[in-house]
Image (cartoon, rainbow, N blue to C red; front, side, top):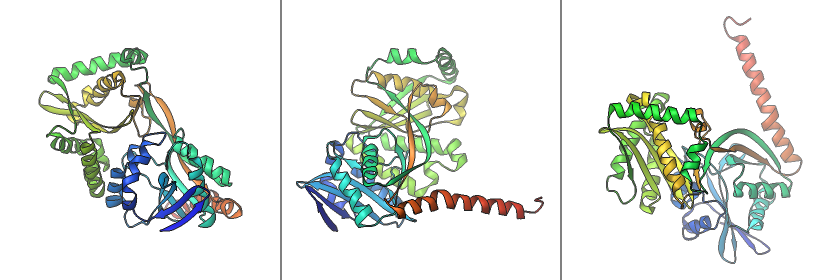
Length: 373
C-alpha cells in the first residue's frame, strides 16, 4: 500500500477491497447517484469470478479518516481501465461523495503525474453521471486529453410525478392498441397472472433458476449470450443475486400464462432508482409478445410507486424499448490520456495510427484472397 497526502486529502492505493469493507457502502450512500453495480457485494463478486488474473488497484482518498472517493482500476494493454461491473449491463464510474471534488482531483493527479500513467480507459460511462462529470472535470483541469470513442443511447424512465395514467397517455395510441391485442392473444392461451418474488419468498432462488433457463431457451441461447452458457458469468451473477436478495433489493417479476412461465423481469433497487437487470420470454409465446406486455404493466406499477424516481432500462435503446417513450442518455467509451506530449503521442498512436494500420492490413488481406481483383 502506497500513501501520499495532498493538503487535507490522504490518497492511498490498495490491491484488494477487504481493508475498505466497512467504509465502502457508506461512501456509496453519500454519492450523488446510487450505483448499484459499485456496491461492495457486486464488486466482490466481480473480483472473485471475472477478474481473470488481471491486477486490481483501488485508488482511494480519505479526508479526516473518512473514505470520500474511490477509483477501482485493472491493468490493460497500454494503461489501466476503470472497473466495469456487472457483466450484463455494463457501466463504469468512480465513487465520490458529494462535495469532495478535490479528493478525486488528488487521485487523478497521483496516478497521471506521480505514477506517469499514459492512458485511463473508462468504458460505458453515462454522460449525465455526476461521478463521470467529476472525473472529466478532474482530468481536464490536470490538462489531460479526453477522447470519446464508441457511444450508444441507453433508455430510462422518469417517475417523479408518480402518475401512471399520464405516462400511459403519453404512449402512442398505436402502441397501446398493440399491447391490448397481444394481451388478448396470450389470454386465449391461458389465464395471465403476474407473480412477484423478493428476498422474503422461499421460492425466489428456484424461480431465478427457471428464469435463467428460460433465457437460455430463447434468442440469447441461440446467439450464445445467455447467462448459463458462460460459466464465469453465471457464477458471478449467482453470488451477486444472493447478496442482493439478502439485502432485500432484488425482485423477480414473472408473467405466467396458465401454468407456464411466459416472461420475466429482474429488478434491483438502489435508492430511488430501479434497475432493470434482465428480461426474457418463452419462444412458444412470442406471438403474444409476453415480455412487452409484462413491461407495460410493471412500468405502470413502478411509476405509481412514490419511492421510485427513475427506472433505468439499461443496455442499448432498441425499437421495443423506444415504444415506452423513455428518455435517453449517451453511454460513452472515454479514453483519457496523460497531459503533455506523451499523452498526445499515445492518443495519436492508439486512436489514429493503429486503426489506420488495421484498415490497411484488412485491405491488403482482402487483396491477397483467392479471386480478388
